[in-house]
Image (cartoon, rainbow, N blue to C red; front, side, top):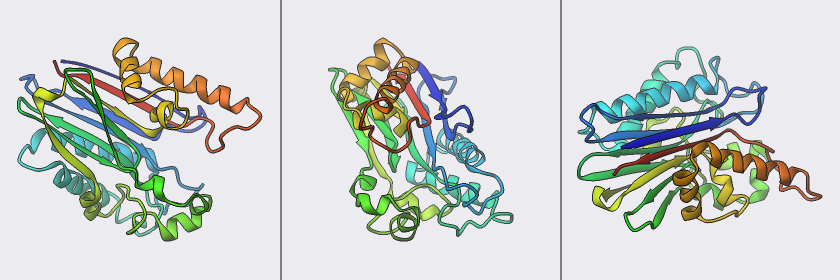
Length: 262
C-alpha cells in the first residue's frame, strides 16, 4: 500500500484551512483517508473565537480516530459523532447558531479486505480507480445548482441556501447533516487506488477543463500529488493574466491525497 499527500495554502498571508490525514493500521488490512476544506467566512463573521483551522483540525482528528476505531459504525454515523464532538468542544464559548460558524466540506474513505466505503459532503471529491484504469468520481454537486445570482451575495447564500433544504450542506455544528452526505460502498477488488481532493485541487478539471478525472488521476500516479497542485497554480496564474479572468479567488487552498491499495 502506498500513500502520498500534498497541500498548498491559497495565500501565504492566511493559514491553510484544508486538513488531511491517512491512517493505515499496523495489520495493513485497511485504512482511512480524510480531506477537509474549511469554509472561509467574511472577516470576523463566524461567531467563533477559534477560527476555521482549529475547527478542521478538531473535526479531522475525530473523523480519523473514529473511522479507525469504530468499524461498527457507518461513515454517516462517524461524521455525525465527529460533528457532535467538535461542537461540544466549543459550544460554551462560541455561537454555533451563526450561519457561518466554522464549517467544512468532507471527503472520507475507509477500506478493509472486502470493501471500500466512501462519503462526500459539499464540493470535495473522491476518485476511485478500478483495476482496468477507469475512474469514478464521487461528487456532491448541490452547490453547482445554486443560482449564480444568489452565490454572488454572501447574505443571500447564508439566508437561503447554506445548510438548508434546496441548497447545499457542509459539516458545521449540526450532526444531522451527516444524513445529507453522498455515501456508498464498492467491493475492494474493484478499487486499485483512490484519491481525495479539496476543490482547490479539482479546479484542474472543474474550473479549467485541463482534462477529465482519469487524466487527473494519471497525474497523481505518474507525477505525484504536488505536481498536480503545481499545475493548478500555473493555470490560476495564467488565467489571472488574461483579459477576462474567471473571477473568484485567484488561488484557493488546495489538497490532494493519493492511496494505492494494491
